Image 1 (cartoon, protein in one colour):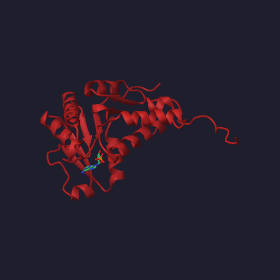
Image 2 (cartoon, helix red, strand yellow; image 1 turned 45 degrees about the horizontal axis):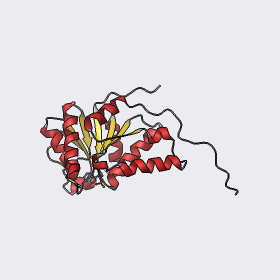
Image 3 (cartoon, protein in one colour; image 1 turned 180 degrees about the vertical axis):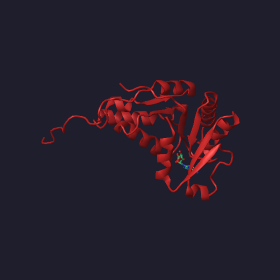
Image 4 (spheres, helix red, strand yellow; image 1 turned 30 degrees about the vertical axis):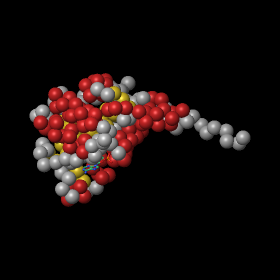
Length: 202
Ligand code: AMP
């Protein structure tokens, strides 16, 4: 039986843009406040841009600890947030994702674009395969992640995913409820693979 992890560090994946709806900025701030209030360490991409910067600013302003893990390319472009508690520069995006994943006990996605989706799905894939056992959650500000939930349900309906794996992702609009759910989260114990090939002869 899998046990729930003790949360000390949370990696947050999030847009390097702000999004058009001001609710996204307010949601990023609310998550930052909750992380700081609980004394959790924030691990993130290390930039001052977009929702990433908003969230890091909030955690720092509330006296929290923020670790940035940034790529050499983005560092050289001057994207590093200058007020971080600590930062690391990695050679490339792949090593950066590995470091973020190693440094966190659980993951939260805020609204974002391709970078955010890619990071979220990579850590979900590692949990699904059992390479790590770390909870994942989407702060569903303004219903932003509803299409992701629909896509997962579609993959289950079409026989590419088990329900247990689609349900391992937590969706919630409230940061406190989301982190509470991550504290209770348990890794699915079912294997990834589903039955045998259907009959394709007719
Ligand atoms: P996106 O959702 O496409 O804006 O990409 C955001 C994700 O990609 C973040 O979680 C970061 O890990 C990474 N990323 C994209 N742009 C930057 C940036 N300027 N500085 C640091 N990380 C970035």
